[in-house]
View 1 (tube, rainbow, N blue to C red):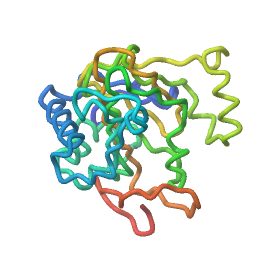
View 2: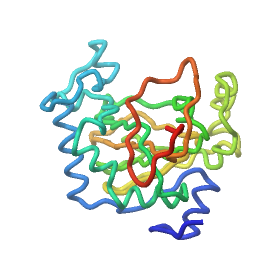
View 3: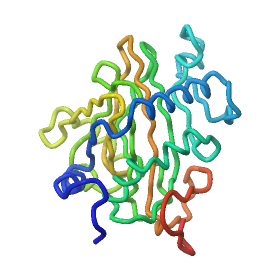
View 4: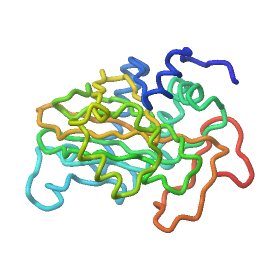
Length: 261
């Protein structure tokens, strides 16, 4: 086993027991401001970012709502780290990557994809309960780790992430199984969600099989969070019909391996 870079044994054990972990104040205010400002510029169309990777909230797309500024109408920005220096610098931030290395016990790490969730005030929609590996279905083993960095304070009122602890041990569920499990969340003692509010600059890490969701933003406060999905460089890609078409993986740290991602 590699020596720890930043976490202690209790933190690593907690992650693998619960499927998620919060590390408070991992990023500096300058780190956070840099990403937040870049996100807003991309949302406003002020950069060379691919406009197809900027998604408005449904109520905006369907003409049911508008906001005072374009960045307050956007649901998410996605798959941009490969083409934007500021977002890529965040994805390579040593403080984040050290935690990923501790959780995966390797320094051979690649980036699978990234998503910056804007969740604007009042119109930011809820995200239903799901497993990330349902979308990352062509990558195995299914033990990717997402680093979700809070740009703004993330609260229950503005839609912080919530997790079902231990749910990563259920494996990847079929659509019918997922419907059955969703009906139990919040009512069965084995399915009680744990909210994970975060201060700006804090980061939560979750396993790609961990069930998580977020509520609608009913507040007047923004709730931006940058989710970067990391995997072992020794991961492999299977031929799956409905796998998403994501950009080529980015080498984040360590070695690449022939025949792997």
